[in-house]
Every structure is written in C-alpha cells, then in structure tokens.
Length: 458
Image 1 (cartoon, rainbow, N blue to C red):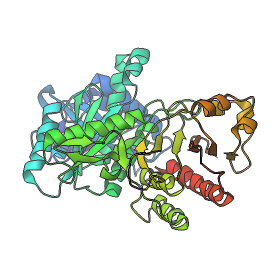
Image 2: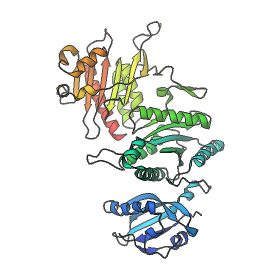
Image 3: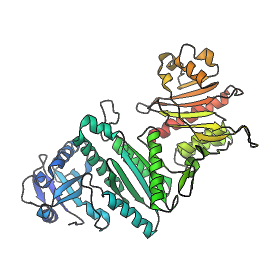
Image 4: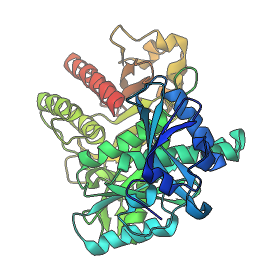
C-alpha cells in the first residue's frame, strides 16, 4: 500500500486532530480517533511530541515514523510538519508513504530506520549499474562510537539515534538517491548523477552537519556524529564489489582521521586503483610539485572559497611541496591524532631531484601544546615560530618531542574559533634545513587562516 500522498492532518499542540483530508482518512487504520497518535506506532510517538516542542521556535521540520495503515499493517511515512496557516498554534502534518520515494518499486524497508533493508539497497545499486545512465556515487556511512552510545545510554536510545539519522538521510536525499541499512549502525547511500566532487559534497556536508547538530551537550559540542566514505561508478571502478570496497576504504580513512567527516575518493590523494584494488604504493599519495609561492597562495584562496575544485587536502599537499616542508599537519579538536598530515619521503639512491621527495600520508600528535608555558608563546595572530628549539622550548614538554623527532624548525598557527579549535603545524627535520624566512612566515599565517575558515565551513 503506497500512495503519492498519504494525507494531511491538522492537529493542536496536544496532537488532537482538528481536521484531516480524504487521503489521510483513507490511509490510516482508524481515521475516527481523536488523537493523531492513535495511528502512530507506540515506539515512534515521542517523535511527534518532540516536533511540537521544536515548532515553538522553528517554522517546519521533517521526520519519519511508522503508521498503522489499513488492516493494521505498519508503514513508514515521511512527514513535513509546520505551523498551520490558519492558526500558528496548530500544526499541519503532511505525510507521504516512504515506498513512494522508491520510484514505484517494491523495495523492502528496514523498519528500524525507515531506510531500505540491506538486500534492497544492494539490489538498487546493482540495478543502477545495469541501467548505466549518468552514474552514481556509493557512500558507506556509520555512526561514530555507536557501541559506546548503546553501552552508556542503552539500546533503546541507540535505536532512537538510528531513527533520527535515517530521517536526516531521507530528508537530504529526497528523490536524488536511496539509502539502506546494511548492518548495525552502517548505512549505504546511492546518490544519483553526482560524479563531481562539489555536487556530491553538498549532500555529504548537509548530512554530516545535520547529524552533528542533532544532539549537543551544554557547551554546544556534538554528542552524535557520522563518518562517510565514497566512490563513484563508473568513474572510479566498474563493478559493485570494487565500488563497495573502495567506499569502505574511504570510510576507514574518515574514521582514522578522527571521525565526524567524509572522505571522497580522489586518485591524486589516495592513489590509483589497479585491478580493482587501491594502490597506495606503500603510503605514497602524490608526487606534488612545487610552484610559484604567490600563485600557490592565490590558488589556495580560490579553492577554499569555491572558485576552483581544490580541496583542503590537495592544497595542503601543495603547501608542503612548494615550501619544502618535511612534515605538515592539521589538528582539529583531537590533538592526539592529526586531522590530516603529509611528509616528504626521500630516496637517497634516486637520480631524480632529491630536494622534492615524494609526498606521503603521515600522522602525529600535538598534546604538548596544552602546556601553559607553551601556549603563552603564541603572538596576537595565533602564530609561534620555532627556530632554536633548545632555547625557545626550554622547560616545556615540546622540547623532548622535538628532540625525539629531530625537528629543527617549526611553524604553528592556532585556530581560535569557539568550536573549531586546532592547529596548523609545519616541521622541518633535516639537518640542512634553514631558518624559516619572514616571507614564508607571512604566507603560512595567511594560509593558516584560510584553512581555519575552510574547516569552519566544510
């Protein structure tokens, strides 16, 4: 049973029905009940109470819940809830059967989330490959630290989180793709016709940010986040198994980089795909070439503000190469693990230009910056430059870190956004590395600020 419009009901703040249309009466099991909740599955009724609270401060919101249809069968609906035009104290609930979002196909539903079930989303992805028109992006997403959520808050709370995340996914995708639960807290998304990174990013960014804002603590920090990895068919690979494997590996990278993020496969960054397998050549991600420094700064500025297709990752790699940095890291919130990091690998036996090296992914930690003495060394621009570690870092935990890692010179930029604290860190570790020139320090300060703004808007 699926209709294009399952009806509209006008209810008061107690969820008592004031009026309904014919479609609603024809859809629900018992249209004569006074309460709207009489036809809503008991475990989902709390969602309607929450909507009433939310609409006290916002104009509209979308949610998914289960409804008893004719013959008491359960059906998932997606509902647009808004203040009624005739009386702002009343609420208009316009519901649509989720199955109508599946293009008329009888895809089976996972009744824990309102998404397709595992076999249905797999079948849908494979059917899109057979159709062969426009291509699509396959995304693997899971809820960060979901086991901890279940263990500390209980499985019923975990189920509620799954419902809320499923609602967000459906609302973001609308008719541009489908999503299914493939196990536990893991969700697969098929986003149609979005082969360019900017087009795909708009969906992933919206999902990530809406989940992050879904539940926050008293300081505004998110309690629930998601990580997502993606691959594209047919641009990246030519079969379902290869595509799933690629998206899964990108999800692993998102998790490894600190969670609450998405990673879209990029051959320039993540390596080529050979015989269906990602070939990182021992971790090598790019032979990034240096370029004119002014041109680089202007190019990064264009990229970060949407005037080119450059991402933070590719731009940061170019910074490392152009300024001959040995190690470069961006730390975002979690100082124990870098958000992203690159270092230059040198082949002493190579006949190629030994100065350039090859850019490889790397990780680091930055816990020593929490020391009060170290923190006081930053200037008003949030910058600290280290040229003589033994003198400048005396009596700080950083000195031992510099010694252990053979760091000769360093540049630090501190990001000070309220919910965006972090650092951009550049190290030189070779014995013949020179003092960082003032012109480079100025560039690094500008670039650090660009990265800070780009991270804030990502």
